[in-house]
Amino acid sequence: MEKGKTKNPKVSAPPSAFEFREIPLAELSESRDFAFRKGPFFLEGLRDSIRHSGGQKMEIAVRPGKDGKYQIIYGFRRVEALSKEGKPAVLAKIYPKLSDDEALRLRFAENAGRQDYTPYEIVMICQELKDRFKYSDEEIGRMIGRNRVSVNRYLSVARVPRVLKRLEAGEIGFKEAYELATRAEEFEKMKSAPPDETVKKTAPDLKPKLDQVRKALKESFPGVSVSIRAGAKRSEPALNIYGLNLKHLKAFLEAGKNIFQPFMEE
Image (cartoon, rainbow, N blue to C red; front, side, top):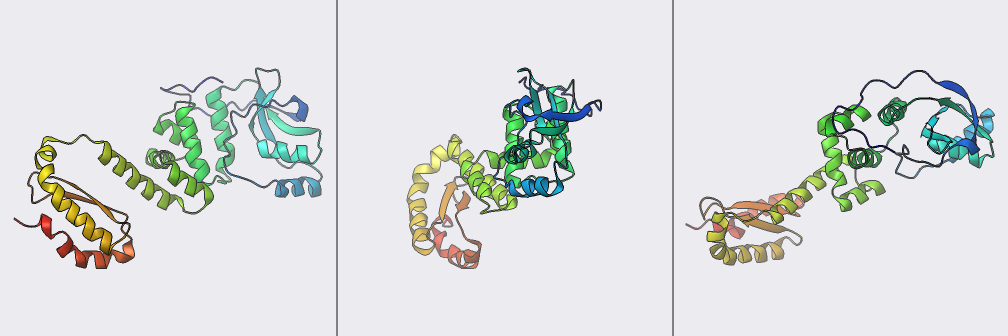
């Protein structure tokens, strides 16, 4: 499958010309280039609908594939449900000429009305459009109906596997996932950033005081850690605190005067 263009991809609506008819399931390609569903889903609802209504209610969309069969653009779950029910054919819109960009837009437009993607799936869709199709954040936003800022947030979560795993499991919502991912990225940047000249000059003097603060924090607030980066003045270092539970914030602030006293001495 050809990659999407990195500059000025086609953004016009997909062609409206299509043929509407049933095609045998055996004529469908196994290609899953447009299968963007990532989470688990249940087929029973679709199978019940097919069983009780006497057949398929919503059509799928396909285009001629390079293997001589029809490549599915959307409707993968419907095809699987029909197959499980022993149906021999599927009702489809057949688009005879459809580029990859047009197929992608058609695929996401079909889901826009139902808005049934989970936050995890949207994150993975953004990542796949970025990595596999080489779209920019703006282009991804136009493709899936989100703005550039939202796409950037989805991609931030995709870059932190441990946060992404919790989002997939439903342990956290997207808002919390984004906050955790942002903090994780900031922490990684801080660890990898080369020390500036001020840090080099003052680090030996700060170390004993930093060790003293860490010890006090460990005793009073298990799980909390700090990073102190020297500022322009030794008595005014930049402070980063990680792992602080908000319900302990009041106690932390009250204890802060004593804990951070080593850095407040002139």
